[in-house]
Length: 458
Image 1 (cartoon, rainbow, N blue to C red):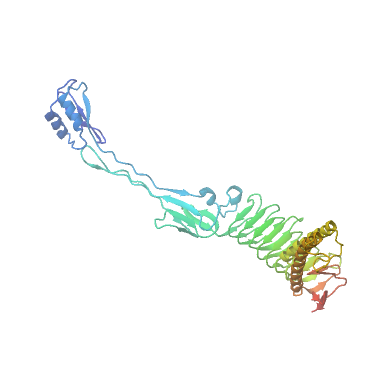
Image 2: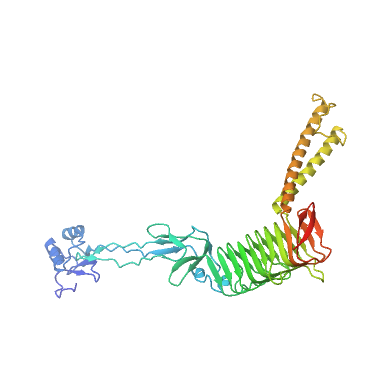
């Protein structure tokens, strides 16, 4: 409010924001009346926030100052802008899937059910009131929303918590959309610019995997180029080029593995291995079968082992690339047999020591009744101890024989099939039997018959 031209009378001045009223006195020591103060407030249109205690004090006393605050408005309570707590690095997530992503921005893998973002809604402010009695609204505050993309969902009706629906890597696009990628395609080589990769989904690499790098995925891995001396791990692996190197590369597939060719590398698969060309000096181990297919389908050196069967067009060559080819030897069964065999040796050694300690003959059979050793004599009690150990040996041997029969029965259903030629020097092992191929043979199937490995021409 503009001050009056008459400086000899009191008046009320209102601040620019109308949140404070100041009583201006003509001079120090001016004696006030309630009527004067009330009139000044009315002239200034001040009717809110008047401090009655101050007014009463002014009338009863003689102020020594010429300016006194007599009214204050009610300040607005400011609101709070909404915000989102992203549980991942948004900068890194915005590069997921780009060729340079892993060198500078690591993939951020998440499991299904992982909380990705939490929204904290805006808190609106409350109204204030100025000394004129007018409502003063607080400035508006911005509320934010989580933008849900693919493979995510809100865990609550208020859309405040976003979770992953599948396992994969988090992706954050320029518009703020949050997704989980369960299939990633890299249009580049895996090299120094990319680095090692670990991904919780299906991965396709439209290039090569260079020597010394590791690529690990939860599901299927497809490499459209060549893999050079690298480490690969996945549910299933498909290499559309070859798998080559000096000999340190390893590929491990929980189910199936396939490649155009394999040279000097190691491949392990829980089910089948399929090679569509040459296998040279490689180590292949399959939980079910190995197929060396295609017009070449040649095995030159190395070791091939499969639970059930191995099929190839050609094994070896005239120059001499001997290979070891094994079927019908399940690892778990062999491990169990090895444990039992060790137990049998330990028990026999223990029995030999007991015979020596008790003075029994080395050929004494504790499993047979012996009238020489009465139960109530020291010798009889010693014999009874030996008998208990002998019973344990007998049970362990029976268990060993049972497992060995399982191995033998299984190996009879296993085979090695050569569709074109098998050259001399190939070492065949089916179950517990071995045979070295001594002469060149045409299309044939090698299997067990009457306790020996035979080949049947096809």
